[in-house]
Amino acid sequence: MSSTPQPLNLSEFIDNRRISVFQYGAIALCGLVMFLDGFDTQAINYLAPHIAKEWGLSKQLLGPIFSAALVGLMVGYLLLSPLSDRFGHKRLILAGTTVFGACTLLSVWSGDVTELMVLRFVTGVGLGAAAPSAIALTAEYSPKRFRASFVLAIYCGFSLGFVVAGIVSGWLIPTHGWRSVFLAGAIAPLVLVPLMMRWLPESLAFLIGRGAAPLRAYRICRRIDRDLPLEERPEFHVSTADGRGRVRVRALLTRDWVLGTLLLWLVFAINLGEFYALQSWLPSMLTDLHYPMSTVVAATTMTTVGGIAIAVLVGPAMDRLGAFGSLAVLYLAGFVFLAATSPALHAPAWVLLVAAFLVGCGVSGGQKSVIALAAVFYPADIRSTGVGWALGIGRVGGILGPLVAGAALSAGWSAGTVFVALSVPMLLAAFLVLYLGRRARQTAPVVPEPAKARG
Image (spheres, rainbow, N blue to C red):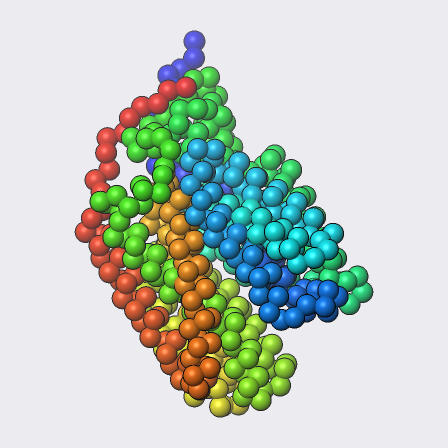
């Protein structure tokens, strides 16, 4: 006679156990998805001059090629990420990765601007579908005490993809041409897909909340904790919210979430606006100040390196000291570093490089950290939708940031004045995050009595 099944509370199961090799593997696969996302997003910037030369394109025609994938990203973030509640995070990651891998492969044989633009748009849609679910799945399989750290870690994979895209492009293009970079960027995700089919787990909240596959969920639980008994009919305690059905975007705008969601969107827009303004205009500003190209490249790279380096400190701080306070301090530091870069523009090169590193800590590091904040801010049942829409709405800031910075420079503002102006929104973002943290403490929902779900 089989013993009575031991009930499992999903909200506590991950948090109360040591991290298993299985969890590390799942998080690593999500990190690889983010790495390939970063690689594909950045590689086109290195390919564009060679494409223009081969096809005889003007600089004006390169703009739509750059923008096509970014528009696709926004579509994926806004329209496809909510589908994870209906189909599961794993399926959306697999579908998105397959799409952007296949479209990147087809880009190898593209013959004109229109074909490449369409392929880049669909590639962006695939990237935008996969990334929010990768972030949400990482958050779900991470204990609460390490959740922000792991989300930050996989998003560092995105930045590493930026760096590796430059290295691979510099290696392949001179000998094999620009199409070889597309080929490398296609093979990697298409190889990753079967590995994820085998090893990437589905969301436990999805499997149990919909009541679809409790036995499958229990098998996943046993891979996390081998001490669980072999049960034929496992029993779970799940939150009543986990079984409420498909999550629509309007769930983010209900009475309980609307103010927090809107303020979080504003923070995302500010941070992405700062990030893309720097990425777009820093090389030009330094070139106009007559810095040698080696210094221009080094300073631009240091902004990315700073964002990766600070994640080592900010992630544990968000987990142990509080996500809202830690991010607010980082934004305040970004405010100071951006303003301090103004005099550093006319200092020795090593001072400029240090300033660029510190700016990267605040701006690039803040971009990663606010994604971790969103993963902590939203509960599991609306996390993918919440993160996806925050990223999508934030892209509006990413579009406006370079335009505003460019308009300021065209109006005759000096580079130093632009940096001082860029510091002000970071101060606003710091206060918004502090307010969000205060409001989250005041309006923390009462956890309802668990409901039982049987297999």
